[in-house]
Length: 211
Image (cartoon, rainbow, N blue to C red; front, top):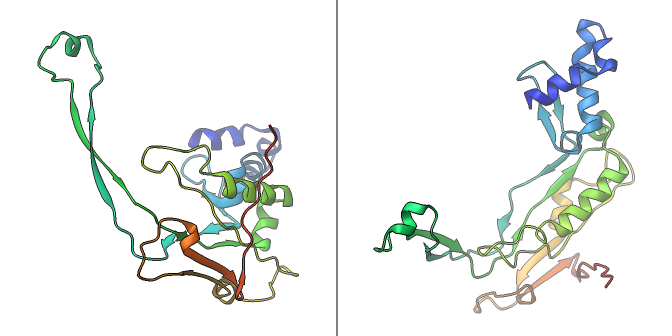
């Protein structure tokens, strides 16, 4: 981070500013160049000062709708890593480990976007569209053995008519209900849940595929 802040202070529009204005100029340059800073914010006072940015986008920790049960699996490395291991005949190249998985779970996270902070950082409508695309597809390029089938199932967006908003966020979140259809049956897919907005079923996410 300090190297990036130093880069900001080497820019012409920053170097030419008076001492008291350099920090604000560096902050604006960092927001303009880096998506994550103008979106989620950053503390950039750890080296050459570029101030602090409060990001307009904030996300909560995701919580599971129902209690989950973790399963523990033993894993063993059998690959030879060094020539010394290859020379041994005793099988000392094995390394034991553990991996945890969840049979199935539905997690819900809430997000907030502040138009006032977006105006300060330069977060634009194009940045917002990129955020929606990232939220929908973020697990498609991060598969692993432990989370191979994780996916974004629903994305519900409330759009207000003014920067001050038409309703409080907690009231809006209450309008979305995620409930298990059969409480006695363990959930193994999203079909085991009903996801409704004001009592009406929410359409699944649609993606266009070109072959």
